[in-house]
Image (cartoon, rainbow, N blue to C red; front, side, top):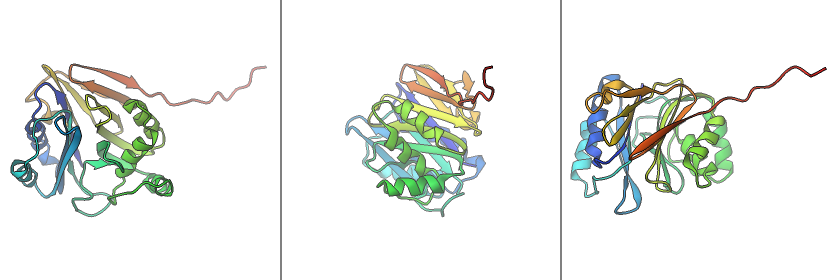
Length: 239
């Protein structure tokens, strides 16, 4: 099972996220990755590595990238769709690298979604089911990240826990879940998201267990939770 971590807060150091990700190692994984917003560049930086988190951390420490950034998302992958490669590791991004996403779960209708997106001109970099999500967000984005995510998830069949960041809205981290665990940790001047509480408890013990069909919108100093309710059909006809 994959592990996901998200962080946004005043302490803008991606090593906070790496430390949290290490606490998910027991779940088993074949690759790991991190993406974070680099305010100096106005871009999202991303590093992915096959193998242990040690491999990822080594590349991070040897890179000349700015390691001060927030928000950030991280992932440990256990391959379900596609081989064990850096291209298939998370985070995934859209055609223009405006949106980055990590995902725990399985998108059952990814093939039909992918075929449709390709016909519309989207270019894919991986064999994963996850990548369709970030391309759908790109498709539906019209200035509001959570609304694009809401529209995306209406098209999806399957289970998901996702965390999304965007250079279009860099002071925001958005998460959503259906059928996969996702926990929000509320700390002092910081918020964490994880698929397991063990990734959170060293920084805060104040948590919210997100329910299915909820979307959490996190900013550096506050958060709110939206609930997506399914449409229902009235079957009866008035006399």
